[in-house]
Length: 232
Image (spheres, one colour):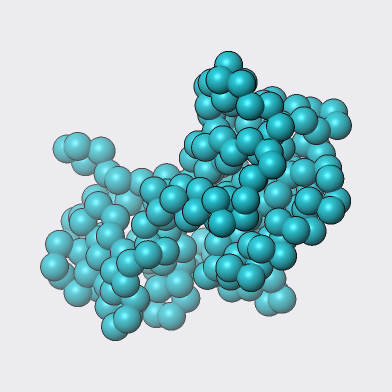
């Protein structure tokens, strides 16, 4: 599952160059020329990281970043701001609005790629590891084995992919349509109720022997993988 990056930038030539360099590195790229389109795509698509220009028509990058941080579904989404504003005060404003990193223009593409990899390593360490861990759950990508507190868990192929996706994005809330696109694929028709069926199967497998439930149902929003509260 290659990381998906949303580039929010109104300079067409710059978007073309960023897309070329990111796709060459193996990323999937979406783009939006303004804040309204960016927020719409964030609702409709699964995005792993946002490259966000400060100066945009309509909503500013600062306001978009604030809106991203206010919504539960995108609260933990990594954001890197791109801007021609280089003063310290502007950098502080961007970081205070919720940006994870700040890259002034003009920038080199090796530096941009390094910043993206650094942020994703913090947010999605599974990108760099053969074994994914969350709370007391461990998933080995090479052997396709899953365990919880050293107890082997047997999952079907769809439940395995679903758990992998959730473990790669802990804490983030995903709607059923986002899970369908990311786990089943864009070109496959899957009824949203099918997602609920596979979530139930995954829960049953993970929660045997009275283990705490790590899958949180968010009413009218979707599902998230959360560490169980102490004493749960």
